[in-house]
Image 1 (cartoon, rainbow, N blue to C red):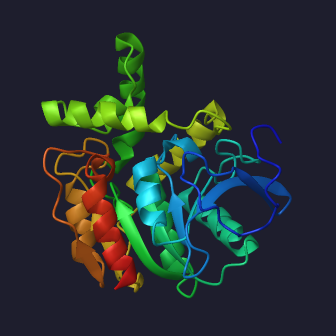
Image 2: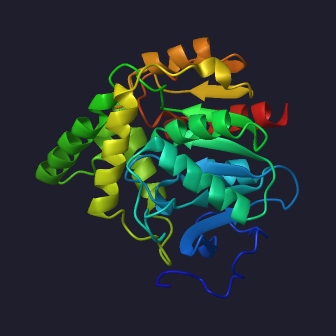
Length: 294
């Protein structure tokens, strides 16, 4: 399969101890489809599965966040069905994405995991935590919200607007979608874009247009659903975001923390938006590790 380091053993959950910039891209067959993934960190303990945002692939994870978490935790990033280099067609429901993620986790042989879901990945993490209570130990949610949350159904339109704006101004859409239009926000955005380019070889495939359309449809459906019963999620959950998230309005973060039975709310990061955990990566990693290890 193109862009895969086939020297790494297939179906093997043995992690790399390299940095995320150099971590091997592996492939595992899930119900006949190849799912791409990378992993690093210590081999013992409960694995931490990272669930990426809409339009994101393996290379959209901030290496400072992944490396920071992997210093003490076994970390696995992956492309869900149809995303990046993974095979198949992307589901157009969050529930379908959650079922595929569970199949991936179980194919690797894990009986219990922790989840870190960012934005769309946070929607998926909520469904997994509710539907698979024995599989999920703890959850970290960032830049995300509950089903039916305020403004979530507008995320696809905002993403399209941001992409058009980025094309016209020759600027990466992340700068306007993930960060505030302030000195701090612009500086943090440029810094993240630099870090995302550190990996030079064996990069993941771009998210295809059909996959992106399916993701947008799923997000719109999630935003238009009846408010979900978050009391069904009994695992401990850490919730984080910036104080000015344009994509998933920050009030959703406060709502999540208030409605989840066992939640811990990180004070909203100041002068930051959807990419707050990247902007404040050192603080976020320390808080996430403390929560997961407590």
